Length: 433
Figure 1: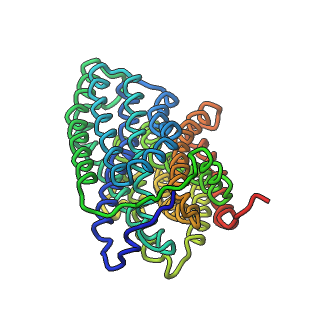
Figure 2 (figure 1 turned 180 degrees about the horizontal axis):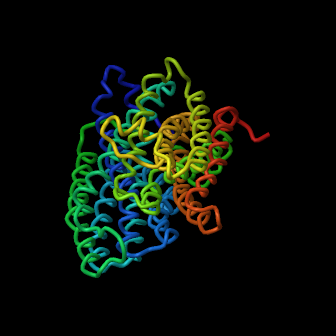
Figure 3 (figure 1 turned 90 degrees about the vertical axis):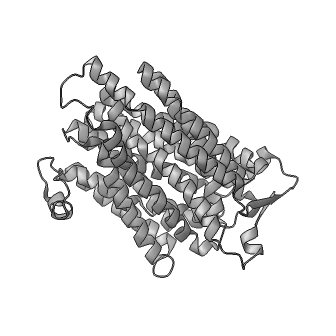
């Protein structure tokens, strides 16, 4: 099947409304994805989970991509990108309602199933919206459009933990020690109304995606079958390496955003549920800089290289820093009314800045020149999000293996090394020979 874009056929048409549609989808993705960083330490405290058990809450969300990646691509080809967005939102809305019985029964198994299913919904939505953004204009400026979408996604990541802390956490979490059953019940009940609101909001966005009078990516039939097309797509090294790059990137992104709350809880920081907001704020700054610099002053490849180097430097700062030192927060946060936080915790948040440009740069580089294979390639790239399931588990296992909660972050370095390789060489490879 060959993908053609109505945006390119009707060049006089503004892409403002399509960008609004795509932006709303990225905002919803951000709300759901970055809520994990706030709810994980909350459930860890409420259900009295070990750090490794808590990592399964995040992993179950991202492992859904392995299950739904290729089926999502096949679904999108059958129903179209706009309908795919509507279906993805509907699945997410229905899944959000599963958190209500999970809270009532205080069963981790139901929470994990709800996380898995909402992950399936976000996979369908991701598979539909990412190529929609990449293909609505020139490939040279694709990273800028993805940056704009990323701003909305990460802005949701800034505000959602703050809202979660204000609406859910405030007044129900014990100051310390073992929780009484009454306190656990209060924590569980505080989840019900917020998740009803989340489900309702996502369903409204599903209706917007379904009925908005906006152009879609249109496919023309060809004779290729699904299995043959997957095999043909996998013959492109820059795409396969891009999938690996996305998987490793999402692993480190999830570590930075979703384990920071658990790390804060482990070292006794009271506002642990808000820590994801700091990582997302750093990512917002990175996206804003990317929009300003790419492609006029910096290529997508160079931005990717710099991201990998910055990631390695920041990880070293996390591992080598002292939890008794507050130098960085005294410089960056306290003068502006922010809290005084340990240096390693601030450096975990700063990984958001290093990570910001990786996703926007890899996507257009990996899809470059694939033509009719774009849909299948997008499904494979989305499967790379399953790397998010690996990241928290690595941190948990590294902690148990003797690296400690802080030293376990050193396991991120190989991911950044691969990102540098992809920026310098991997994206240029057109043959395995």
